[in-house]
Length: 316
Image (cartoon, rainbow, N blue to C red):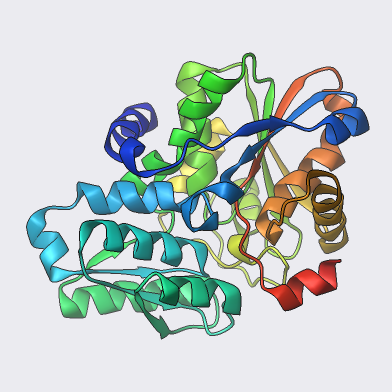
């Protein structure tokens, strides 16, 4: 896959429909880490998550015949909301399959955007299998949350914006689940800013991709409960994100649930914005690694804001 070309095509396709999100310097985190720390505010993107970039790019790339037949996707919440948003934009039909334990806030968000929600499977990997089967049996187009060239290209448009907003970028921290976001960003930086070090961060309770990279094969591993529900679950066999992460991501780190919750409190207390667990995971990764990055320009992708109020209460 030529990530650079996919990102450029995605940028042309989705630019009229998305927000170019702010890149904000944080005085608090810059002082805390003795670096210049910037937050890319994808929590302020449409639907409250970066996922709308990839979903829009995919839906806008479909033929009229594919749109007429309909689409189906699998999602723990944010990708489903993004697909629902894209369907509303284009008038196409679609369904969103979610795990049975999916965040109530994220499911409600999908339904508000007009898509039909179907509960299937106990984790993201199982739900993806159900969705692919549903697509095959009903002649729908399946839209993967991460294992798709157009989805990866759409997520990578964040890197295009970053390069307009800041130079140099010495390091960028990105949460990893299936790896669509980090694959797009790292793949684009590999061509346009190879000196930028890309850090991938997963919760200790769900580090399937990180452990798969270490084993040099995609592993079928269980995930423990994590507040970073947007990065939880397995990785599809043969996922194209595996090789992209292996080849283009410089550092892979894990953070504990306590580190994620602490990072979320630190961010919300200083920046006065609500964020979800996956965003806290990336912030926690920076805080863990900050000693090695003193004096540098560091970007953290604040990937989403969709957190259930009862979960937020436990964090606070």
